[in-house]
Length: 321
Image (cartoon, rainbow, N blue to C red; front, side, top):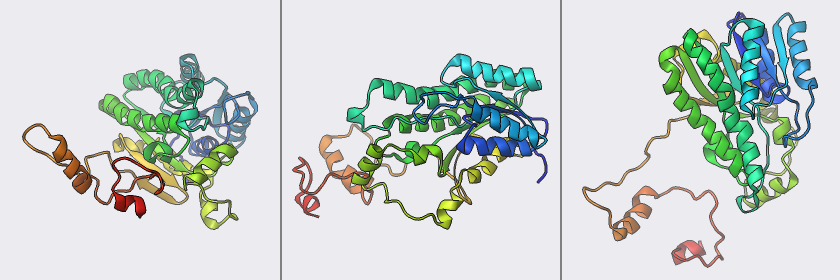
C-alpha cells in the first residue's frame, strides 16, 4: 500500500467513531502522525467520553503508527487552537486538517429553536473555521497544507427537517471553495467531501425526523442489508479523503467530491444553468411569461404542494394533474 503520508501530521475532528475513525485509521496506516480528536459526545451533542478518541489513537499506535488523542470541542475557538497546538507540540508541524465532527438537531424549520440552530452550526460550520483558521496560519508560513471539510447531500441538495444541518454543510462546501482561493498561492489546498455512508449519525435519526421525511416522500422503509448498503460502510469514504491529503493532490483545489461505496464523483461547480437577458429593466409581465417557459421549464419542485390545496397562482391543469 505504501506510505504516501509518511512524516505528515494530520488533525482529524470527530475521529473517534464512524467516518472520522476510518479516515484516522487509514491515515495512520499511510504513515501520518494523527491527532485523533473526539470529545465523545452523543449524536445530539450531549454527554462526553474520552474513550473513543483514546481507543482509535491506541489502535493506530498498536499497529506501528503514530497518534495522539485529543478531547477538545471543535465548536470553540479555543478547542480548535488546542488541536493544532497539540499537533505541533507532539509532532513538530501541521500538514493536514480533516473536519468530520458533527451533530444533529433535526426539526422542521417552523418548529426549530434558535438553540437547535446555533448548536448544529457551531459544530459543523463554525467548527470548520475554528480548526482551519489556526492551521492556515502555520500552513501559509510553511508553504504547504491540506484542508478537507465534510459537506453533505443535505447541504448540496436539501433534505426535509435539516435546515440547520443543511445550511452548515452547504457553508462548508462554500468555505472550502473560498479557502482554496485564499490559500492556493501558498501551496495549501482546500476541498470538501460529501459522504454517503451508514454511520451512528444516520442510524440514530429521531423517529420524528424519519416520519416527516416519509411524509415528504424522501425516506424509504427499512430493508434487509444488501451489497449496496455494505458498500456504503464508513470505511469506503476514507481512501478518497486521505488521497486529498497526499502530495500528489497538490493541484486538486476548491472542489467537492461525492464519495459513497466504491463511487467517487466530482461535483460540478455552481454555474448558471439557464439565462434570460435584455438590455433594460425587466417588466413583471415579461418575467411572468419567461420564467416558467424558459428558466423553469422541465425542472422539478422538490416538495410540491398537494393537488387539493387551493393555491393562488397555480394553473388549473397543474392542480388537477
